Image 1 (cartoon, rainbow over the protein chains, first blue to last red):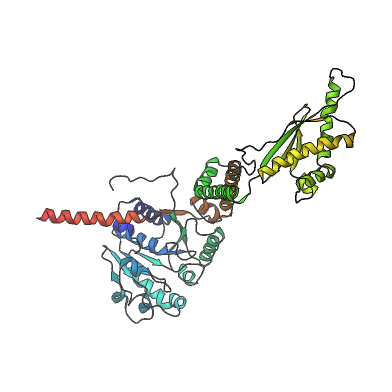
Image 2: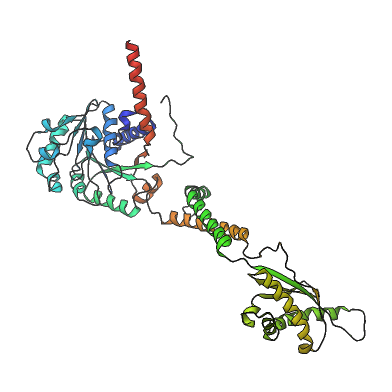
Length: 220
Length: 247
């Protein structure tokens, strides 16, 4: 099971690190409210979904109304993190088979809702670039304070490019010691060419060196 | 600024690859130990001492230039001893199954600085044979040298003896292991730096800022399994407490 550490251990230092991410996102744009954040990475297995879920949780802890959308229509995984069913979801909404309200699921965490991917479609990139997607985003912005999109990786497939300019902010997750500099640069270029607003990088799974230890501050 | 070598960084690299370095060193030492103990045939050494002295008709006190001549003659003797004229005779006498040339590679003639005593050192995998060759070579040399140089000035000081406790001079397992350890360490450290150099991945905040020129909005440490495990036991405890409180 994926770790929802920020929910399970709100006082752990790692949760604190997610809160720093939250603060930095909130401060990264003063003039415009950032209502949607797309979480992506260069390749798969860099920790996108874990990061997206944990950021969603720390935003929800601020009593914001948060929606986590699994826009990874190729390899959806949000349902595992929150132990939900994935019979209905984003694809059903985009193909207008059902309205958003009946597809969204509550997570049991206060003010955090999840929209899973739904059945895997044959044409994910097309769906994400459709007018239905734009309508859907308009609709959810009215209902939620912040929407977080978990997306496929940038380099292998095109889905993330399509979503990039529709979201207010992009976050690139980089797994420490895992991504070559060239690949990361390429991912950055793609996202910037797609006119996405790249807020910054989350360096994931970083190993501590001994001289920079993190201690629990306060009680565990 | 980037060109400066940061000692701490070098140290960090070594520390990170400590196990790699240790492993290579241990493997090198083990291989060298196994090879020296089990694979290489031990080589034994036997030595005879011969004295080179000009027997002069009119006995005078030694002068240093004469001594010097004798010392220098040892070089000549070295060549003579290793020549087929002597070694051919030795192989014949001992019925050895090798050519004089092969034999000469086993024989060394040395003398200490400014000394008239020369050592014939023979190495062989068979200790008994080494002794035999050394003694035979000395005696053949003594016999033959008057014919070759028309002087009679060689006497055998000490014959080679087969010592019961004769231990092989080669291989020297501990020296070999020590060398392997040093070589292994060097190879390991070299490999560690090579890997570090070839590792072109993004590892820390500095890499992100320098290469991507993007701000780092967060650093997430590795979430350890145990951290999540603690948690289930903690919630279990609180559940039990809750119950007892109710009772």
